[in-house]
Image 1 (tube, rainbow, N blue to C red):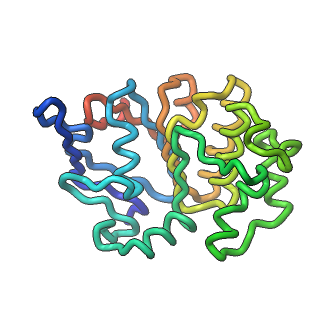
Image 2 (cartoon, one colour):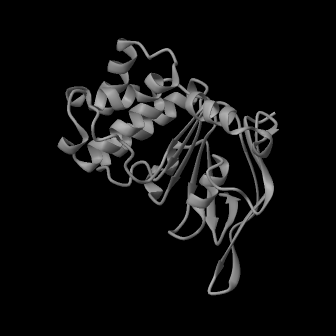
Length: 223
């Protein structure tokens, strides 16, 4: 059984009175240890697809299943716990809290969720790999866009969740930091975490175990 599965997934919108499918009849699955990358042009439906997988958007038809259970059958409280403990979503925009330091932002899900915090050693390990150790006591307003992005990624990967979904995670990074982030995703996948990365950077595709292309709402595995 796949950890996450989409079956006949459709999301329709209307534009100027005309219906169109942002996500068009997609079947997809990912299991522990898979590192999947999805490439496609802006407007191809990638972000809508990710929002459907995480339950942030309801499908017009079809199902998303987590460990065989449809999202529509999972209550809000249980789904919140799953997002906090098992699934980490890295959106395109910045999501750090301005009143908290980088360290506090990374640990925030554990503070509010009543979960056991990662060890100081794990925090330093992840921070070092992402090159933000010297920024842990800084506030987001003191960081560059790329530094904030790396702090957001640290928050997602630190507890080795079951699934990481990242929407253009390296869009604001230079080539050295892009490689650094991709190596982290590749390593965490080798340790059992499933990873989905949406990107338009073709030079990163070689890190993945499987690559899909998305065009006009349709998803196809690259040959």
